[in-house]
Structure formats: C-alpha cells, structure tokens
Length: 162
Image (cartoon, rainbow, N blue to C red):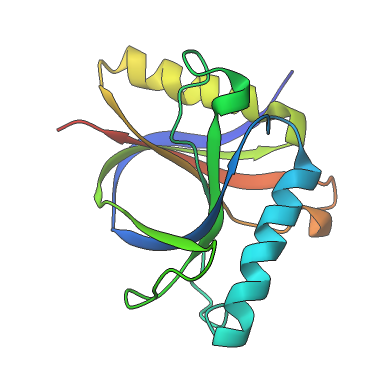
C-alpha cells in the first residue's frame, strides 16, 4: 500500500479548544460513523456562529491505546476547534488540546490507509528516540468528497514529552 507522505516533523503547536462529542465502541474504518459525529457537532455549532471562522479545524482525538483497550471500550472525540469562551452543552463537551511539541505527519490518504499513516508517525517517533504522550489527534484539511481521488488530507499529531 503506498500512501503519499508530505512529511513528518516535530512542530510546536498552539493550544486549541475543541467542542466535541464522544463515541465509545468500534470505530476503525467506519467513515459513516465519523460523518454522523461530525454532522452532529456541526449542527450544534453552526447556529451559534462557531463555524464561521476560516481557521476552524475538524479534529478527532484518540484517548485510548488500541493495543491495550478492548475495541468495545475505545473512545474517540470528534469535533471542531472553537473560541476560548465556548462552554459545554448537553452532550457536546469541550476540552483544551495543550500547546507543545508534536510529531506531525502530513498525509494524503484513502480511508483504509489511516492505520499505515499512524504506524509511520510512530515509527518516526521511535527512530528519533522521542517519547509520545497520550495526547494524539487527527486534524482534517479537506472535505474528501471534493478530492479528485476521494483522498483525505490529514495531519496526524502526537504530543511529545519534553
């Protein structure tokens, strides 16, 4: 499987506030599930004017290690960056993604290539003798339906220990 890598590097990323909905259970490869979750948060955010900023990022956070947590108990947090003063409401929660040094892998991939892309980022971390934290997320850079090959342009970000 050949995935297109733009690059993997260590970058300092700013803190971000994320409004999200959490899902627990199987998610890998379920593009329909991700679509429903993003739509749910978007329908909450749009009437509040939170989607008007061109710098809004669509993000999925992976708080659980798939190697140690059973699939039925794995969580994902799917949502959008929002202004600092945004508050939680009903099942929409907010959290802060901390600023810091991150291994950032930029990829242009098909939906079934996410696992390989994550593996490449962790291989880079290991080869550079870096130590990952448990803060890791994907930041989506395009609407895959608008890509001529249906590819996802995504940054995979893994926070590193100092």
